[in-house]
Length: 272
Ligand code: ARG
Image (cartoon, rainbow, N blue to C red):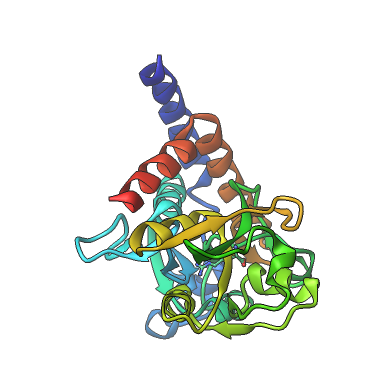
């Protein structure tokens, strides 16, 4: 049954690919007419979709020593990016950068799309357009196993660590607590392990990965304090041509169970 469904999905994908060949990737026509090939920005290559990410966010994106689904890049988002490109008859290229730089790079035309476990927020929506969401997430707290922190308000008098520019930082800001922000999740975790921080606020799936990889840590959830978040792919404002292709690919992957399978697969990997 699953096979049959997949077969139908493949047929649908093939049809989509034909329809999509002319449309995927930004500014293709300009590249052909205006710019000499050697000087054309990466996004104007017609055979690749350039995705920006920040590969510091397992299980969504991380660098794998064994090699990942796109070069050295592995994770749920990387598999999704690869499938989107394939549906467009193109290859996926990854441009790894700081999380804070992603939306600027998109606006500059340095990349075609951002796939980075990025939560849709009203503020971000002012500068970029988001795809259909593909994953529901929430912020959680990572604490030492013997910590007495049981809900978000328990953080009030504690040393809180967040990651710069993540929605975890925005949540803690909204609660009015002071905090220290770090460039990477692993830096914040080090601070917790070394006893300099009492709690790290970060997305749940990533938190679970860190807890699996480090002794004596646990995840504490507070669904009343932290709102539901949705991850989506971002494109430059008004790039409906690419957004339409991305949305078709995502909707297909949601419908045929690909996203669920990837989430399960990479969660298992994360526990190894
Ligand atoms: N979901 C959070 C946010 O928007 C964290 C995303 C971090 N992603 C990454 N690839 N480092 O902002």
